[in-house]
View 1 (cartoon, rainbow, N blue to C red):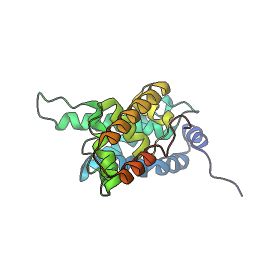
View 2 (cartoon, rainbow, N blue to C red):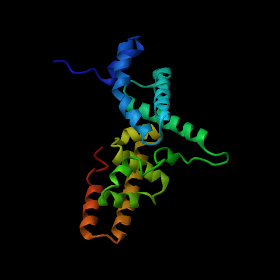
View 3 (tube, rainbow, N blue to C red):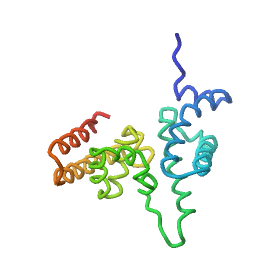
View 4 (cartoon, helix red, strand yellow):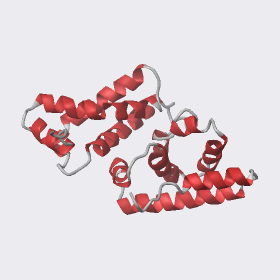
Length: 202
């Protein structure tokens, strides 16, 4: 029984003119891109930004290396599309921070959903005060379940920088949680959850 073709195989076939391979490849990653925008904007903007992202992917597909992650490439395009969208919507004279691209409304983002439970509210309380560059990677790594190389590609920074920010952000969250006046059991459970995904193993 043959396995499904990899992204690299589909990309090569797409470049050779195989439109069916292109459709399979783009459908494979459609849901992730759609969910990304759905967490940050509302209504028709979700579909519009998703479409813009895939149009840009089609236009610039030859820029993607065969050994690169298409998902990371797509999410990098999506992030830029969202930043442009927010800048178009912002009041004149008001600058949109780059961190806002991944934290437009944290209480309705993946972390916001998790915050319905006590343990997740503790996470959220520890996350919000972090510097934007640390919040950004923590969001992508822990709540969007992105791998470190994908985050590096999406944010256009080095893998080592991602790891450094994750370690520092995680340490700051740990210190904040330990300083909170919460029940010992809740504190222990929250810290255990924070340590449940080792950073260097990704």
